[in-house]
Length: 407
Image (cartoon, rainbow, N blue to C red; front, side, top):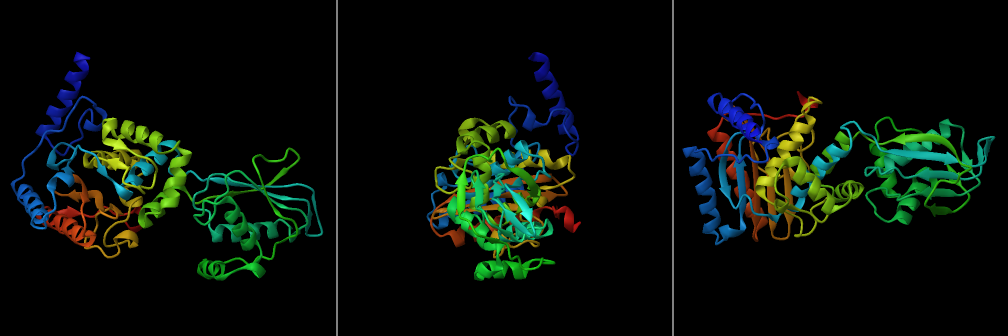
């Protein structure tokens, strides 16, 4: 233990003397190490101006959490280690947990089986669809799947559409509604406005499917033993799913992924372990952030973001590949005035406005921030958050953190 402490201190001392080098043992891997507070007069002025602005609106500062840090020092702290309602900042923990459970290129598999045989384009038996946990299976996927059936020589089905497992489609939790959607997508004669709209948006759309099914929708827990695998449909890669989740703050995707990780309590433990913060700084009830009982400290939010960064570094990705980047993306940041090139995650509830992200600076390296406001007047709170980031960006020479696709 003594030699371990010496190693950590040695890494810190070497790092302090040359602050842009990587320490021997990063702080986020050393549970006994606490970041020192490092003075920056201009940051202090900017931070104090932000707090005074909140006070001018009679917003109690004892309900506002802010934490700003670099890899080697804390720059600003107001209740930074105390949990606050995190809203959709929770999705950062979901992102981290997903990256730990699956690879960045993981694809969820929807397997298709048949019973009976295909005779002259007619499947004389059932078509069986086995759910594979794809949280982003939508109209376009179902249309593509129907076209694959056509390529495989199936034009109609005399049996039932058998759905196995927890089938969810179009961000709909109800299995039976999702089953109805799947059947509707298979045959363009039954399309409604929603399907037609998504079909028109498809790049290189396939022919309109005409897969008629004579039987009923049947739901069961397991694949019949006599069934034969016909085809395996792959989801979008995990990176694309996570970015869509964070860009639009999609609650369904987040909760779906969290359930596959064991639910909110298990996700809390995973995020606490991977970000190396005490369990009392992350307590979640789901993966989306819906509900004020999803709570996280601003410091924990920053460390979750850093842990995500560490996870994807080996894939040559940045957090801009997983979160919306100001000046490039829209989604939840469409109407914000955040300086360009900053990846962020927003969060909102009735009286909660949260924002967390990273600024790459010439002077300080990457600066991580989390702001968790608890008050009325969300538009004003967002404007003040944006101004804080603008002031910090004007203080430093910032470099954009961009998705790899735009570099």
